[in-house]
Image (tube, rainbow, N blue to C red; front, side, top):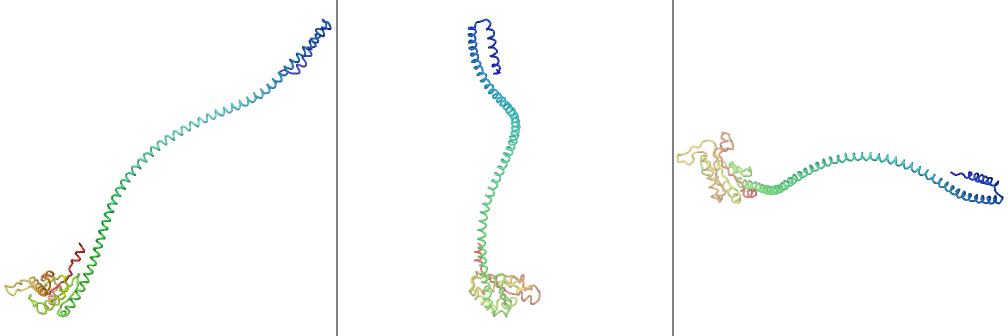
Length: 337
């Protein structure tokens, strides 16, 4: 740098030296001329000095500004270098993180691929299971519809059967009432013969009229006595007013073997005797207006005793004729069909 004091000292010395060198050899005019010249030179030097000084001051200002700029640039450069180093460090860290992230992403992707494959397989299996379940459900639905149809069919059949049962029950009740009324009517009509051993009983939905042998027949005979016919006529009066009653006449004997009275006898044993006696009763009843279509004769012989003993009373009880009265079952059979 140029110092201002340096110029202030240097210029007078230079001027004095210049004057002293010229005085001894020149005249006063010359000396004046020189002096003027020196002044002019000094003035020019001063102008140059001022210019130089102005330039110096300008340079000083520029230098200061440049120093400030340099200092700022140095700081900025230092900061930039620091930032660059930080950036480079961050970039390295970021690269490291990016590498870790990439590896992690690869692992995740690989895991996701495996998981996706597993899920796809699972979904496929579940879909197959659902299809099987759907098919099974459709089969069950079809079976259910069949079962439902069969159920309704069975229910309808059951309802029809219930209706038939109710109708049958009503018919049975009606039959029971009719049997009870019939038994009472028969008992009332034959009350006068009860002293002869005649009984009227109800059993298994039927009316049993038991006529002992002594009321109808003599021993070993198939011909009906007068009192027996009277009893049969009384019974016929009830039966004629009850056309819906079926009649079965059964002849019974004891276990004493029958002895034919002659070789030409129609009766060979107890079975023949029981049949002929039953037939004789049927003939008496049909003769007084009972339709042959509703009456039949059966011989039981000694094979259906009411008393299995061998005493005289047992044998007397077994020798009998039973007239079995039962309501026709047409209405009941109609109900069952």
